Structure formats: structure tokens, C-alpha cells
Image (cartoon, rainbow, N blue to C red; front, side, top):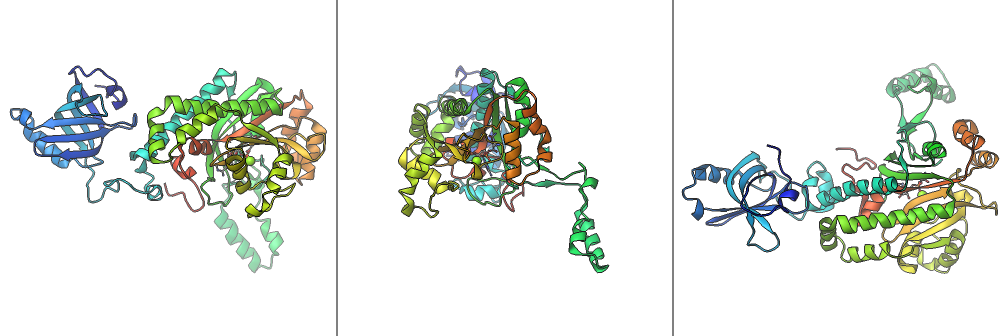
Length: 483
Ligand code: 4AD
Ligand code: MG
């Protein structure tokens, strides 16, 4: 028989029908005559209650077996239980199951099961990443993550976008920040050993470095894991008009913070014929759509985050979903922040890169809602952004939100061949490495724009959780790849 999910059982009519419940025991209470067992299968936040009344089961031929199973049941054990679905006399639940049969599929010995007791810290749970989805907090985050993925695909599907898969392995550095993980099949240990031998023969250090010959590497050139699918997305946007990526991206920045992961998921829409304003409109619409989805379709999990993680979360997100985002140029933002320089560790000046403390001050203290800062100095932004008339700023936009800082980074792209080539050279990059990207400007160039939203940052914002490491199943960070 096909198992029924607890989420479906909980909304079935309690007409005494016989049903079988599968799941993991959350709690067991065994008093003199009554046994209560809460079983959860993760299909929704709630557990189902199984009850057993010894007085009523004196003549049950299964009684002996049931008692021996009850002894084996502790928090974490997996069970298959059969009984009748009836209205629940307890408050807080509409239905419960009166047990007729129960089988322990797998025990979870209380002496060793790490989740025997409740109330572990999120830090401890990260050390048992293989078991932590059995806790309320991580299970709720995982369900919201799955729901949001569905919401994202729906949002774009409704607006004529095509889902585009960017390659994971690439030879170009999209952000030009040099934060890439190298991908190689070269035998590094052998090369190092050869280097030592060559040194012994009197080879210079410079020559020894040439022992690494990338033409002999798997791809015939130096390759890395992608930091962004944008450049490739632009190729398809200039053919299919509207595309978006949704996939893993990798950054080897050595930042051990609650806001950074070495492997994170990014959503990158790319739209032909969109200028910066259209891009900003889409970004705002997108964030509001996702907040509304979480608030209306994930109510049980959101209630949990409201009660256990961040009081006022639902009200804050509802407010954001219903108000206009602030739009302000970088130059105006700097004017505001300069006045407050004594508050900041890093002093603000025109031309500086905004630090998290500045971003958060703007959105948390000054405006108290999401802020879109646009037209940044070209020196602090990537090479592909469209140069403004002033020759100093580019058509970049960052969306900053309270509690998180930067949620989205985007821009209108430079669509002029010569200007783009100049920017590449100005940044000491080799136009030859970007020949195909430049050709998009040579053949049928169009104004186009896009942005990247960090999926885990969005999830952190929605759940109120303090660290990106808790909204991704297995996090990757410096010195952290155990699971
Ligand atoms: O601002 P970023 O670097 O922009 C890009 O990668 C562009 N190519 C996007 C585009 O225009 N298509 O990154 C975009 C977003 C950031 O705003 C942030 O939310 C997230 O990606 N992000 C990270 N999330 C987790 N860990 C990290 N190390 C992140 N780095 C960026
Ligand atoms: Mg950015």
C-alpha cells in the first residue's frame, strides 16, 4: 500500500477510517493507562498524535506485541502505525489516531541519539548536519527553501522567461574578483615533486613554475567553478529575450561570516531590451512576490519562525511586501552616510565600496525598508556594467534589505563593443578571454539588464535565521566540507 503523508492525513475527515502512519517519533508519553506518541514525517510542520488506551485494549490480541513495541519507542525511532482516524479531544489538533498496531522500523537508542533532547543550538546542529533536518528549525527552513524554489520558477514562468542552465565549470571570471575555485586534473603532487627535482638540478623558480602546463590540463586551459552564470545567460537572453538561471555558484573568498558561503545558489534573470529602471522594477516585484508567497503559502513554518526565531518577523515582511522600495543613487547615499561618519568603523567617502555596516545603516536606520542603491563608481563594480554619460559611474544596482544588507546585485550591461572592450582593458583583463562575450555586442547588440539574487540570503531574510549555514542543507565554508 502506498504510504499517505501526514500532511494529508491531518486534513482528512476523522470518520473512523483505518489508516497507516509512517514517520519518526518526536515524543512519547506513557502514563498508567494511556500512551501518546507524536509522529512526524516532515511533510508539514505538524506531527500526528497516536493514542493508546490500555483499558480499552484488554482484549486486543495484539496487546502483548504493542507493549513490546512501546518499550522500543524513543524520540527518533521510525515507526509504521495503524489505527482509526478520529476527531481529537485535545486542543491544537483536529484529528488523531487510536492505535491498533505499531511496528518500530528502526530504533534510536536514547543513550546515543544526539537529538534525544530538545533545545540544541544551531551551532551544535551544524556538527550533525546529517541528522539536523529532523529538528523543527531545520525542517522548516528546508520546506521553505523548496517552496521558494517553486515560487521562483513560477514567477518567471508567468512572465515569459525561459529557465537557462549555465555551465558550472568555466574558463572566464565573471566578476573579475579572482575568487574562483580551480578545477584541474593535473597531478599536483607529481608536479610539486618534479619542481623539487628540477630545483635540485639548478632550475630557477620562474622556470619551475612553468612545470604547470595548463595545455596538458583536462580543458587545455585554466578552468574554475563558476562565480556567476551571468555571462552565459547574456548569450541566451540575446536570443530568447528573457532567461533566468537558478543554480549553484562558488566563491573562494575567505570570509567566515554569517552572510557568506563558498557554495551558494543564485537566481540570475537576464532580459533583453531592459534598461536599469526596468531591471529595478523587476527586482522589486520579484522580492515582493517571494515574500508574499512565503507569507501566504508557508504559514505553518512561518508561524514557527515568528514564535521561535524572530518576533515580529511576519509583520515586518508583510510591511515590506506592501511598500515601495527606496531608490537612491550611490552619490546621494554617500551624502547621507558621510554625515554619520563618526558612527562607522570604515569612514565613508565618494568612491568607497559600501561596507555591510553602511548598507545596514541605510536600510535599517534611515529608511527602515529595502533600499535600491544605483549608479555606483565604475572602479568598484564589475567590467560589464554600462557606463553612464558622466564617464565615472555605471548603471549598477544593489538591493539592500534590513537585517541582511545586500540581497541582490545587478546592472544594465554595456552593450557597446568599443566601450566594453575599453573597460576590459582598463581593468587589466585580456579581451581575448572574453571574445565570445564581446561578439554579443558585435552582432545584433541590444540594451539588456539583469541581476543576481542570493538564494540563501533570501531564505535568511524570510526565516529570520541568523546564518546562511542553516538555510542550505550542507554548507560549504572555509575548512568546512565534512558532510
Ligand atoms: O553581487 P554579485 O556578486 O553579482 C553577480 O554575481 C552578478 N553576476 C549578478 C548579475 O547581475 N547577474 O552576487 C549577487 C548576489 C549578492 O547580492 C548576494 O545576495 C549573493 O549573490 N552572494 C552570496 N551569497 C552567499 N554567499 C556568498 N559568498 C555570496 N556572494 C554573493
Ligand atoms: Mg554584489
